[in-house]
Length: 216
Image (cartoon, rainbow, N blue to C red; front, side, top):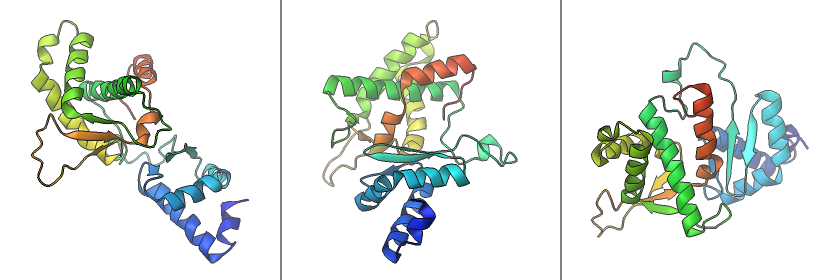
């Protein structure tokens, strides 16, 4: 069945299909927790949506049990330069490395805590634990320049990329209760399902092979 046929198949189905199409275009990731009913509509008619986006846009629909995203392999309007494109990307070496270390930290915590992509609850972590891990890894990776990567410097790098990771729905800051006075180190972040779509080792190899400092 085609998306066009679904839209012509009845008012309720048409409304659901239009809603799913809009949600997929409104943010980088569509999570099951955003709207479980519509996520199940997408899952039920996954082949129809895949065919629609491939035929008309040349995009791929990537989906698992918790998360769906559209992958666009090419930017068509080249007059819009990279800095002006609304897309997830880091261009500075330290920012790229910090993102890789966030993924490394996520993978380590999942192993140690026995968390899998199929678990109902997402992994959570303290910012202070991420900072401790990232600072040590920066100093290991940047041998000979360790003095440039003090805890405070790494804290600044991480604080610089966290808003991007929240905006593009990799992480969500957990709001403390009204009576909690939480320090920066004790701030809790939740790892959203998009984190499972990236692997630190593969991204690192890609950066080394391309000789670029871009992650996206």
